[in-house]
Length: 222
Image (cartoon, rainbow, N blue to C red; front, side):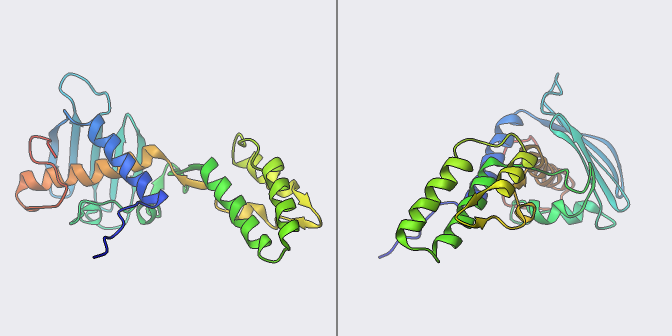
């Protein structure tokens, strides 16, 4: 009998790590309802006596604002944004949710990633190596390792410059600025978990989301 692999993809591992960090940071948080009038809401989540890792969720028609120790984000999609973020599975969808950001900036949820840069460089190498002889592929591998992977670029601009300037045996990296060298900022992923867990806790308190998987109970326990 075969067993299914439970190995997570790098993306899934990042999401899981953010969840673990959120759970640890908010283990003693309690919810305070500051305002609750239809879709006009203001909720606060914090450990009693301190706002460390605390956060507020505020909604008004068509918008949701998150603010706290881990950053500030504003979203817009549905008249009641709690309906947009409510998760029946207790999971998050940062790719889609990031598209609904109104601030801070269009790409405020993304950050340069050395891992993404290295993955793009290796993907480019693999594509080139398919058309090369074994000796030429080895020579290209050495050139890529020396010029592009021997260290870590400081930021996205430097990464693009390294890729743009790379030349070996007539080969270059075409349009390096088109490569996706970013990943979700860790604070944004933390915020996504805060929204899912906070909304689930509020709805459970209100009695309209019984049994949401992964939702904390009214005391803040998960």
